[in-house]
Amino acid sequence: MAEKVIRPATREDISMLAELKSRYVRLLYRGFIPDAFLAIAEPAYYYNQLQDWLTQGKLQMDTLWVDGQPGGYIVYGVDGIDTSYGYIQEAAMALPLDAQDHALLYQHALAALDGRGLGQVHQWVLRDNFRVRFQLEHSGFKADGARRTITLEGQPLQITRYLYRAHT
Image (cartoon, rainbow, N blue to C red; front, side):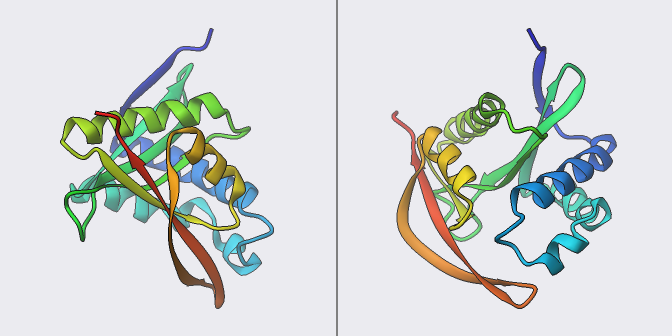
């Protein structure tokens, strides 16, 4: 059985996590994110973003390690607009995707947020990302009907909000 450990991300993890995110984005989002964006989805593109999340102190970034290798990460914290809600910024997983590892990271983040009194948590997801939507629903999230349009490399993309309510 694989040894799985969740721990806070460190500066030393950033290069490996940027590699993981680059592979994740290029494979998981192919077909519904503009090719121009996928072309620049290199680890260097994500390095500073991950470094900022780690060092700014506004969000928590935790990593999943499977047998000593990075299995994924999740970034979460208090919503910046409505501080009565928790917020999951993003999660990225090693490939091939392991649904149990994905659920493990989300359970970890949701428990941490609930422990801070944030039993309602939301995450925005690309409407066409059915894999992630399915995983969120499997973790207890439900689409709440809120939608927005974002623009990525000149292409409008629909995002939808998913809401989780703790059973406490």
